[in-house]
Image (cartoon, rainbow, N blue to C red; front, side):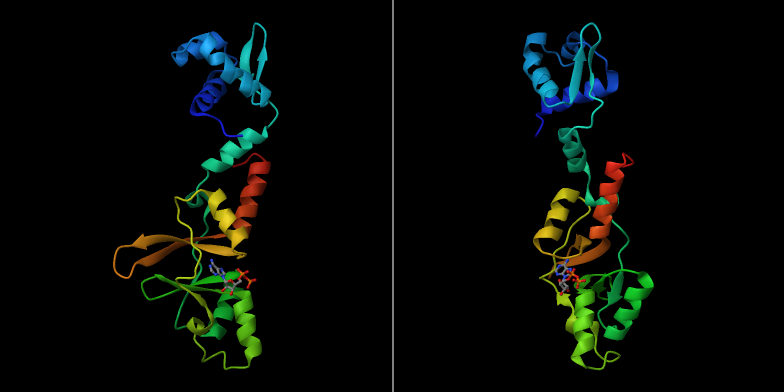
Length: 211
Ligand code: ADP
């Protein structure tokens, strides 16, 4: 359920000052009680507010789906992103494998000398190279990586919900978090990463009320 701006205002007032009468809420919003009534009815039916005679309106103690959804929509990638885990494109496939073990990650972002994104290398890319029979010490990672412009990225400002949808739709484990850098052709500076684990951690924190 999508709350209207006025309904969000009402929830914020009740959160701050509840229990509060409809008269007091109306006064804060410069409205009449009659104008407020439909929104209060909707918020009660949605299970977000509760009302008690002679006490007033207060936030429902039951966590409601609408409120959880509202909370999730406010979280941005920048709030939860992890540190970038990168490897230079000239590094060998062998070095990429070692780095994946040392850093304990499943995806490495491949960058140039300036930290600009060139591609992504995943576990399966490395396995494929390993069973391919070439010399892994000599083969540069740039040969086997998935490269720009085919990389699905996110930005610190993007809502986590939209980024999580990209992970599902494109069936990947991780997204580089990037900032565009002025220039031609346009470059992307890697500033972090968002993985399935990052999202799972957020899910647990939200479920336990710690976020
Ligand atoms: P795994 O290899 O562990 O299954 P993924 O499912 O993330 O990991 O990777 C599958 C393929 O998608 C690999 O070839 C990888 O290079 C590519 N890939 C991984 N992340 C991205 C991304 N953000 N954008 C585009 N391609 C990606």
